[in-house]
Image (cartoon, rainbow, N blue to C red; front, side):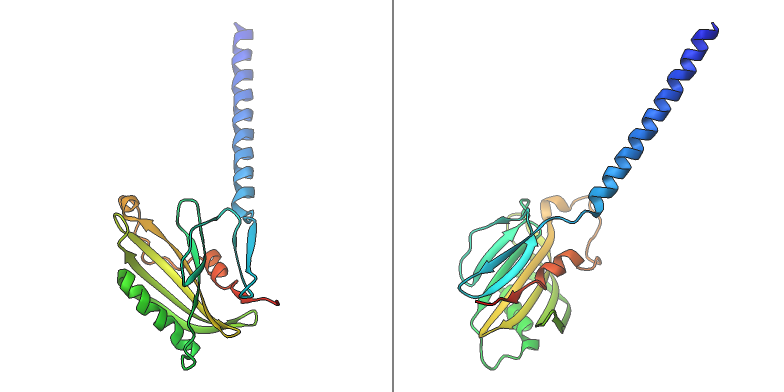
Length: 197
């Protein structure tokens, strides 16, 4: 009887050590993947001499003018669209975001401008316009968008980065309307720059 009790204790101790080691291994693997940055890809438009950097896993989507590059997560959100606009010679950079908003207002509804600022980032002056809006595609998509407008050379270029959720996925999720724009997506928008020919 004593040997049965010893075997049970040995089994319990072995299982406890195994579970603990498994949990520690999982926690360690999670912590490594959680902080490991995703590889990035730099797209260069040779004809226009501009570049933008985004996650390697994003896939290309078809484009039509004024969009010259359209990529996104395979699940469709987040995504990035790079647009080259006709540059009105009289348009100051600080108003470029507002001009782009005119177009967005035609595509969607409930457009709410969160912020509009002009800043310099790594040698490029940007007008950043953050907004929330809804686009009527299928059941509808609630978007959180950052427009990074810059005059690169003689061109007005906009990097439009959006995150959000489809209305069909909205039910049961916490309201994201107060969340700040994700820093990793802001970095994608601000990676837009002119490159040497």
